Image (cartoon, rainbow, N blue to C red; front, side):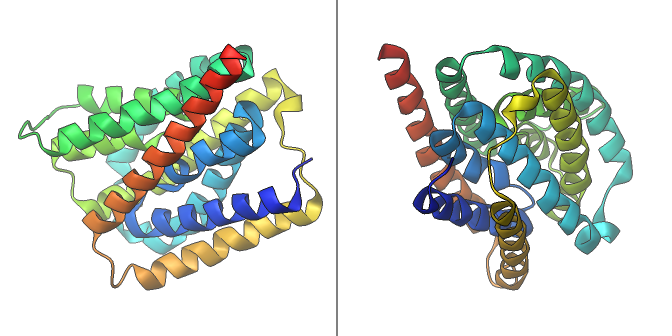
Length: 251
């Protein structure tokens, strides 16, 4: 059972993630996945990331409905479903310590690639890059609770404008999150986080407060500044999760 102190840390991470998700369109999983893996373990931590991600994106969908690019959504979501199935099997089958290293490593690699690609002048076109981005997002979301970097890299390379990009990601995250949850719980129902009822209610309330706060702050925060903050915090969290996994492996 999670102690009250650790649960407060979890709530703080979820609050920060919800703010980032509302401002930048992504960042929820990047911010909270490494920390929840560190606190709850790789299986329960990633599953809670998936649950919170679905809830936050579902709430945001109604706020950004007019900006959603449904054609792009379809091109991304179908291959993402194909990627989420093998990723879910992998996440259930791998022991906790190696999975913790994998989670941290996936986030670190994805963040590094995204940073490198932001400086690239390459522009991708056509449907194949959309398919690859969707498949990669489904795979990494089911393994590490992080699906944003793959589509974020595509958005950078395709010069996808920020507003429709951020809006389209919300229904996308809802779908791949629900598929990942269903697959994991069917494979291993014991992965569900052992939280009390009031804790689940507190998580829901914190997500709502984070989205509301992000909506207010979004009027003053530039997108590039928000994404930079998300990357910095995610790097720290992913590094900690990776180190913990390595220590557990060696111990």
